[in-house]
Image (cartoon, rainbow, N blue to C red; front, side, top):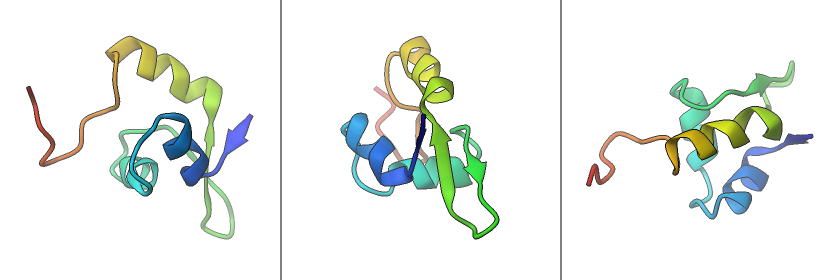
Length: 64
């Protein structure tokens, strides 16, 4: 199942825009469509979230 960035943010209870930023930073697997749109395959993201127990870190985030 492919999701747009906003759908990923909502599923993970992230602020809108986080999935897009993480994809651009190379921290979240994604597919770039010919029109420049990002799509995420949930089956590629879900194991990452389960493995780290939370979201991939972003620069400037709290590291506690």
